[in-house]
Each structure stands twice: as C-alpha cells, then as structure tokens.
Image 1 (tube, rainbow, N blue to C red):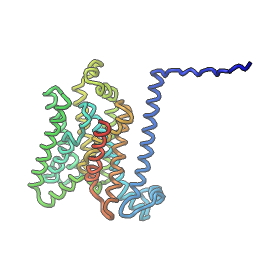
Image 2 (image 1 turned 180 degrees about the vertical axis):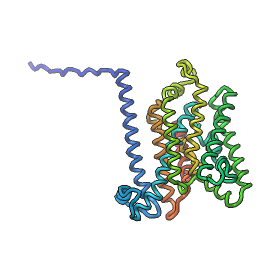
Image 3 (image 1 turned 90 degrees about the vertical axis):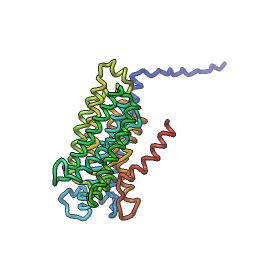
Image 4 (image 1 turned 135 degrees about the vertical axis):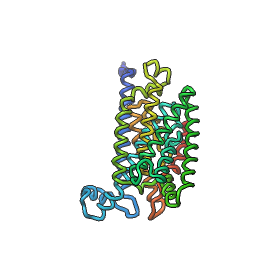
Length: 354
C-alpha cells in the first residue's frame, strides 16, 4: 500500500510593525538613490546640450580639465553651461523644498511660493531694484536679490498675519495668497509702466525666468541660502511631520503650531528669494515637486523634504534641456518651459490621483 507523503506546510509568519516600517524605509531609500542617479545623468545631458553640442565623453574630459583648462570645450562647460546647470540645481532644490513646507503648514496641496504670491512679491522687489537701485544703488547684482527677499519676506509676513486673523484656516490662507499674488503682479505692472524702455526690458526679461543670467556669484548666494535653510528646516522635521497629521494632534504633542508656521513662512520666503532672485520668476516647480515626492515616500519630512528638493532639481534640469533644444540655436527662457510642462503634469495629478 502506497503512502502519500504530505510536505509540511510552510507557516506564513505575519509581518510585525517593525518589519513593515523597515520595508517602507528601504523603499524610500531606494527611491532617493534612483532620484540621485537620474539627477547625475540629467546633469551630464544638460552640460552636453546647447547650440554647440558635446558628447558625454567630451563633457567629462572638459570637467576633468578644471577651471584653468585651455580647450574650447572646457571654456564652454566651465564658463557658460556649468553655472547654468548649478543654478538649476540651486533654484530647483530651493523651490521644491519651499513648496513642500508651505503645503505642509497650510495642509493644502495647492500651496506653493508661486500660488501664494511670494514669487510675485520677489518679482516686484526685483522690478523696484531695477528702477530705483533700492536698496544698494549701482550694485544690481546685490540690490536685485536683496530687494526680492525684502518683498517676498513682506508677502510671507502679510500672509501669516492675515491667516492668523482668520484662525489659520488652510483654505482662507490660500485665498489670501491669491489676493497677494494679484496685488504684487499689479504693482509690478505699474513699475514696468513707469520705467524707461531699457529698464522695462530688464524687468520683462526677469519675469520670464532665464538661465542666461546665471553666474558664479548667483550660484554662491543661492547655494548658501539653500544650505542654511535646509539645515534649519531639518531640525523641524518631526514637528512638520506631526503637523501634516493634523493640527490638533500636533498641539497634543506640545508643538506651538502658530510659531512653527511663522518660522516656516520666513524660511520659505528666504528660499524663494534665493532661488528666483538671480534667474527670475519660475512657476510650478514648488507645486509639482512636493506632489511627486508625496506620492513616492509619503508625508515623513525626513524623506519627503530631500526628495522634493531632488525632484525640483530634476524638473529644472529637464526644463533646461528642453529650453535648449526646442528652438535650434536659441535658448528659450526656462520660466516659459516650466509653465508649459507644469500645466499638463498638474492636470494629470488632479485627474488621475484626485
């Protein structure tokens, strides 16, 4: 008589909470690594793209020559394209991080430096600097970003005070941001109307948002502002994560939400001013980057904030490449490109992911 051998069943051990948490964090780390690799590839392609096309090997050789090299490729890469690419990194990271924090403190996924009027305020400050030299005459490279920061800071404080008067309700804050946006746009148009044709042209060119104004001075200032703000915001990571779960829960943990919002608005205005002061108004980066990050890693600020900065850079790098190939022999202002690619992307997020 044959006996049927029955293989012992393998017991499925249920995953513990720690196992699930470890698995989620492993996926988050992998996402950040993939984003970093994609960023490295994008940077090489951006350096290779332009009116004078270079191969990736030529770009790497020019980078190895250093700033004191004497070849034509070295001059193209180090004097023209590298400042533009690093400016993309600084601007994208700053706007992506600023957008994340503003969406978190307002509990509204439509909040960003652009939609809340902070970018418009920075544009008005730049227009004032071009027209009057405020606050440092005859030094446009310093007065324009400084004036942009002053006005963006004023917009952030005004938004905070108006919101506090109405109980810091998220929807009300966004509506106030729209009002501030239109207000500073009107003021900017008034300054442009009063300016001479030469100054008006400078203002219009600034409003387009162009990487052609990139310089090593702008790179140093923008990167310094971003690094400083990122370090400060990292100390508020757990508080912002708790706030994203609800204001009542954050208050139950002893977090002073009003003070936290004020600090984040000040830092967000500094990030925005540092990002756009040297290249002009850039739209949609601060709105789209947090959405992409949130979809992949959730609301944990330890992962969402750096990934939002990375996605901001990736979007800027992609826009930079498109701006150099869409019209052969010319470079389209990057602010136009980000708006064009941002609209369908935002529609996709709204329609597909509610």
